Length: 298
Ligand code: HMG
Ligand code: MG
Image 1 (spheres, rainbow, N blue to C red):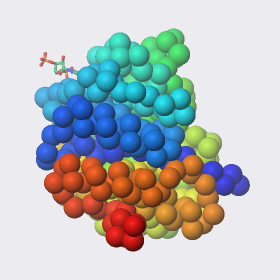
Image 2 (cartoon, rainbow, N blue to C red):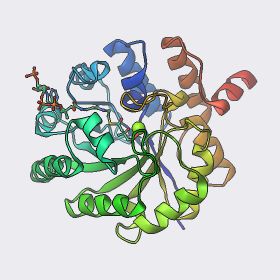
Image 3 (tube, rainbow, N blue to C red):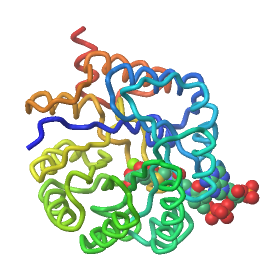
Image 4 (cartoon, protein in one colour):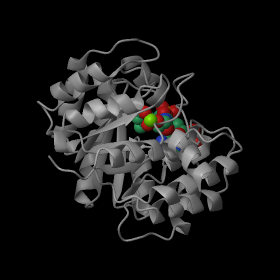
């Protein structure tokens, strides 16, 4: 099995969309540039969603405009519909991420439409993206549980993933939006979903509300996963899932992967400094245990 793991850094989008303190575009740009300099191959740079729904992301066009990009890093943005796609294309994006859910209630609260309606919107976006040569990643939220509906059937997750795969989405990220998953269930989910979508095209996206994220990631690595979403300093939460904490911290994931002999190409010591810096900017504690430990030992 491949010993390289691709980390998709989602802090500047998933993290900052739910932080109380709104950062300036200049500070967001500095964060994205520092993350890229740490060797992160993918840094999700923002989202083109309704500014009424998520005001923290309203300046994504300004952020992209000011960004000095590195050739080894990709900078996708999240879009929910054609309006978002047009804004991303105007900003010169080469890669976007679309999103739906495996829970009807979450889909309604997050995008004001049913799962089927959201897939119709994504179909339109995926077609437009393909004809413009823009790569599409897709997220499925609530794969291991929903804040409104509780347990979610794996069959529903698989069906949604299959549809997204058929729309031409190059990669599908399985979101444990409220961090309720546990390792055996996470492993079983990957086993089932990888029977309809090749495991190389699957990513995992764990929020760490119940402290299970690293254990879940280990279980998913065992099932063949090699793409992991995470957020420097464990930033964020979810605006439509009360009480959900941020993503698993990138520093913690990289530290674990190094211990397993898996390569990420990331400079952990620089990443730990960046995690501390952004936590200070946000006036909040650093949620990465490895990050805190590394900063103390240096
Ligand atoms: P709606 O209110 O049904 O949309 O929202 P609408 O089409 O009726 O438009 C309402 C207004 O929004 C209009 O403006 C549109 O122009 C504008 P008005 O006429 O009122 O001035 N609008 C837009 N503006 C900018 N960009 C756009 C856009 N679209 C419409 N793309 C909509 C539907 C989907 C737009 C809304 O529900 C929305 O923006 N939702 C996004 C919510 C969000 O960003 N959630 C967080 C990201 S998902 C996530 O975090 C989960 C993930 O991390 C994985 C996991 O953890 O599970 C990915
Ligand atoms: Mg998320």
